[in-house]
Length: 268
Image (cartoon, rainbow, N blue to C red; front, side):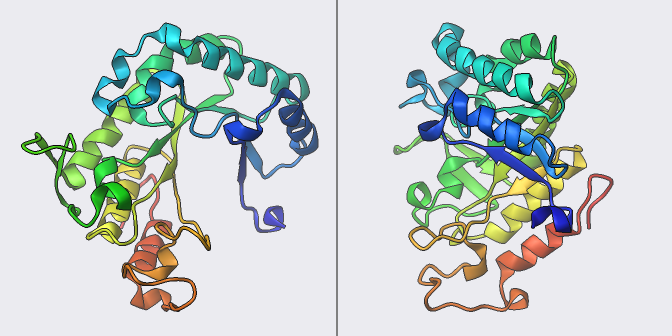
């Protein structure tokens, strides 16, 4: 059905269901589907060393701690390529695909690309997490505004605004150029109740596209979790049972409409 509307699809698997057999089946089944534009081998991978690690310390994780992850990705990549030599294979860094872990995976990605140029890197941009997560934010922070680095009193604070987001996107673009590999933002978003959420969505999309980085907004309809169901609007009490906002009356869906008109060449 999606191919009828020329909608591209990226196929990915959660680590709980991963297997060589399943990736073989997927690649065999979809290798001839023109609208399947990528195989994202592992969604938001993480390793033992990531647990309880602050994002400022991720780059200091020993690369030996990623050996098992590298071996797993290599196995899935080789199996997919035994069936499908054309469709791009997408690799995410560890630490739940956050940009902070890109440096840990750079050498590994370069090794794979030495024999397969059709490799793409995906990161998930939920930055800063204390702002975009409703649980961590708890109504305390807004966009634009200051957000503490640590969850403690007297923590150093950082200003997050359009300029800061543009700085982060430039860093991703610089990494892209340095390593000669295509990178895109596989997910970005913010809890809909956060003050300034619509402005954040616009800012991330505009900054990424201004640096020629494709991006995919995470907007999900769920019955049990609605933090990023932007159709409900910004009201905390809204739910799929009691809210039917028109798109023009909803600042979040208006933001989605705005970014749908943006392009890498320029944005409105």
